[in-house]
Image 1 (spheres, helix red, strand yellow):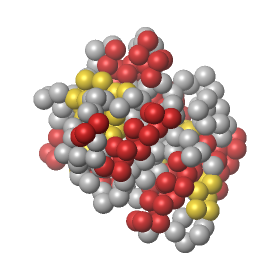
Image 2 (cartoon, helix red, strand yellow):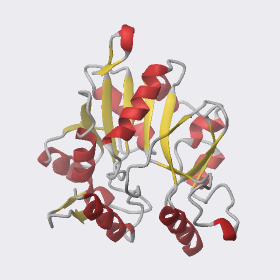
Image 3 (cartoon, rainbow, N blue to C red):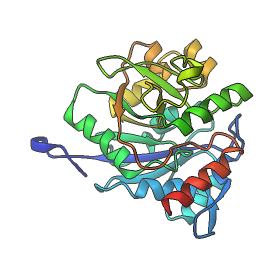
Image 4 (cartoon, one colour):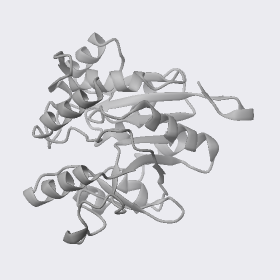
Length: 274
């Protein structure tokens, strides 16, 4: 339970959507990564550990459609919710998982299965924003890109790899656009400037249950299909997505998008010591 002030505790569920048949990286949840102690374990287990580290008593579930992922999650001690193979993305899978829950939460956190480096305080900040402002239906965190992340984003773009996601947002803190391209445009002479308004999107979301349930009924938009970014469905339908700018965790954040990302992520795990 998360304290929501005079209104009592907010019931929070953290759901990790995880599918086997990813077009970008098949079987990605079962890819092994080495920790600083030399122990190797699958991505889904790393992500379960990261979700469990969030304080406040949220229930943690893995939502999947594949028996191998379910077995790996159960071996790590996680609760598994079986969901249809037809789910097009993590948000649809989280919505489908609601039907498997006996206790419906107030807030659902979509802790994407490749966001293993997400620190607990990021999720706390996301939930706190939702609790503080009942008008927010969907929220997602960002961090200003470090010079190293700026260069990695640009290198991926130049190489034609689909890498991290960037976002722009307005004075209201609601998202203007998310893209797999680097936005806004960066003049070459400015690349490496830590003050640039280049914000790296951390791949987790928080939803109020009515907004999550409604998502699957929204029309699939052209931009969502072109970018391969599920959150654009909200924007194309005119539904605001609140951006929560979180503090520097002291290490770079990156999602496991491609096999080439594994050494980079393992280096960050070694840097932070766990």
